[in-house]
Image 1 (cartoon, rainbow, N blue to C red):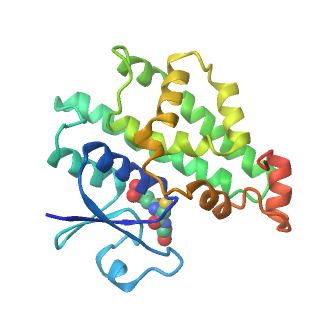
Image 2 (cartoon, rainbow, N blue to C red):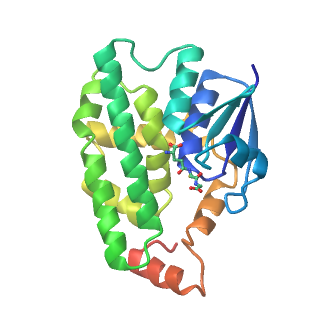
Length: 228
Ligand SMILES: N[C@@H](CCC(=O)N[C@@H](CS)C(=O)NCC(=O)O)C(=O)O
């Protein structure tokens, strides 16, 4: 059955699903919607009003982790482990990564340097918190698994914001397993190719990262060191 992915260009949750679909070579159609003016056909089918949503024929799926689990269950090769405890543990860490995305969003939307610093600290502490899990799961090398696909959109976005990128590499030793794994994900073609070509411009615009003449951005950028 043909799949239809309802998307927003810079959404990290949509990015998760696109990486999985592209990596598995699944054909799908994409509808981009304006989140400020959600179309009625979308609101009629998606109770959360959030993207991604996946239309599978007349069925509607929402929540990126649920969508990705469905796609993983229905398209080979399976990425999630089958052994119940191992599978549950990986899903627990995937759920944990949702909190990291929230910290990133809150940092990028912060209206003061105090707020920015608070969320940036939570973000970096949160990333440091995955170190043991990552070190254990990469003993036999790096692979794009279900957890990697959940976290890659976060690391990819951090890499676009100079202050956060610098903070990441100050916090994480680049030569450590976590550092090398992070770099592997940021640069993985499945990650870089599954965003629109104008992603950086749109992302920068959405979060006002370089805008001039806007008090929040100008102050924020100077204060946060985000301006290029
Ligand atoms: N927990 C959801 C989060 C999805 C989400 O927050 N999407 C944002 C765009 S990145 C959205 O649709 N926001 C619109 C709204 O909240 O009204 C998931 O994993 O799919």
